Length: 614
Image (cartoon, rainbow, N blue to C red; front, side, top):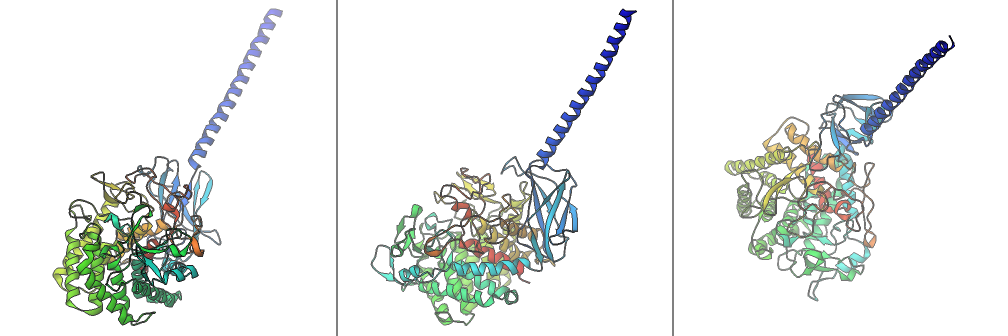
């Protein structure tokens, strides 16, 4: 009996222990499962950021944001537009399909949030709920022509801030010496080139032959264009008079820069020296080496200087100089460059930059005077541009096989052709120019869509180590030997070209006057600059919620509110410009990303003007 009872007790204990073990095992298993699920949720939620235009969206244009995340989000996920005051939902829609840009990295996914269908003025933010956790974007405005109303006054004030008008600069530039000479000239005025560089340039990188950006003269022409294209908006935001004064100020500097011989002085260089008397009129090579080659060819700022003076002469308004003097100077400079431009060019021959800059000069003189000699030159330069188009649709920069790519002025060939068509009435010439514009815009859309590209960043072709290659960003190995930086000017120029060119070859009744594909292309580029980019960085200083750090400079200059920073580049160290990078600190090289540069703001002004024009 006792033995059997003992055995029974042992069996009961065994059953109880077994059941207890199963319960414990189940509990541990559930806890482990919960831990795994929790970690999965944390991984899915980690790093989710809503990227948006941090400043404003136009009421009736394309509107989109981007969700950045480390793990592909579930399909069909809903996002909401919240009123930023009441926090009530006013619109909702589903996210687009998540995608990776493999050329940039393999860590991040991007899901587009399109709310073009939302048409209600106000201040809003985007909200996304993922596995019970809420994420929100920065606030932004939606209003009729909101971008122009906010951004144009900001940029006008920025250029006023950039004036080279400190007492040190005015005293030194009143009698600045020519390089290698004791001769002095009066070159007071103009705008400092960047937040970290108080030199003054018509252009630089002349020795590269194919990379030259248009600087002070392009800034002035852009201002004149804005005054003429959107006068009602300028009146509405009370900035028209100030912008006109700024444009006249720029024209006066261009006038002072015209030599007695008929060429323009290219650069007033500071040598980054605190002594203002170190400033010289120079030609500039790599590593701040200077020469006496300071005479501007068409591509070295001469063409756009003529264009700005000729165009502003039609205002019949005087600055320090009279409107008649502006026109006379433009004609004299054009006559001189017709004879000597190739002599001033570093390689002694014209390329695509000479063609579009000379086209601008001849066109503006034709509009201002009606003279057939300018008409004939404009027609020839327009034909030259058309003949530079490759079968693929991109322009050829030289006489052989170098694709035209440009970190600042990529849209200028189209802008020049559009301006030419403002006066050209003959059908054969119009047909030729319109076809060139159409081919160029078709190419821009095609190359941008050739790879997965959720932001719609403008891609391009370039020659890299002897082979034509497509990419997002300019190659870091190029003719300069050292120069590469963010390309916000390029984006602004292409956005402007898409709109003004598209209105001629792809007109539409939509809000920007172009077919939807071009409207989205241009708006994506503007939104990228204003914050809808992978770094969540608004490049318009003093606006949005996330800006680059302040950069100081000599004589009280430095970063100015309303100025545009260089922007995002290919990965530092990748010669072909592949990958993606943005650094706010880099041992003194952070200027490549964060420095303000007047061509960026000038081209952004043109893009926003085009978006704001009726």
